[in-house]
Structure formats: structure tokens, C-alpha cells
Image (cartoon, rainbow, N blue to C red; front, side, top):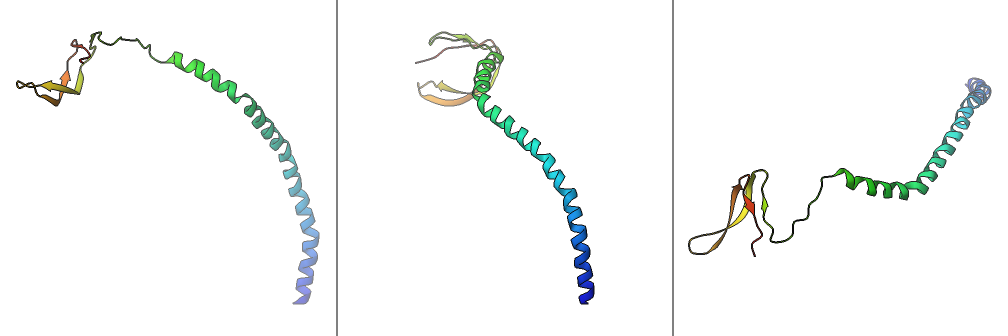
Length: 112
């Protein structure tokens, strides 16, 4: 049994260095890739504020146009608003919460 262990250890001493030599170059080849990755990360860290500023300048131009409507100015609905929450005054002048459809073409106005 001791003879088998001795032979196995001798074979491993010969084979393992050859296997390790074949494996090591793979790790050495990856070093330039790691350096490139670190270089790119550093470049991004330097330029990200500029990129964010460019995005902030460009993104608002892609949206819809906003129009300012002063208080008290009536506006006309372009399409029907379904289940709009409204305040309704009954015959006894009580204000009640209700829901209704506001049809296209109706005018809306701020009530004080």
C-alpha cells in the first residue's frame, strides 16, 4: 500500500507542474482586460456629470408642449372625461360629492 502511495505522489509531482503551467497563462491573459475595465470605469466616473447634464437638457424637448392657463380662464374639453369627481349643489343649496362624465366640448372654469 505504501508503494502505491509513493508511486501516486511521484506521478502527481510530475503532472501537477505541467497542469499549473498550462493554467497560469490564462490568468495572465485576463490582466489586460481587467486593466481596460478599470480604465473605462475611471473614464465614466469623470464624464458622468456631463452626460447627466446633457440628458437633462435634451429630455424636456421630447415631451408635450405645456400651455399656461391663468386662474379664472375657461377651458374647453377636447375629449370626454369619464367618472370625474365633481361637487354638485342640490335644490337646498347643499354641496354634495358626486361623479359624472364631462362630455367633450364642455367648458370648465375654476369656481371660488
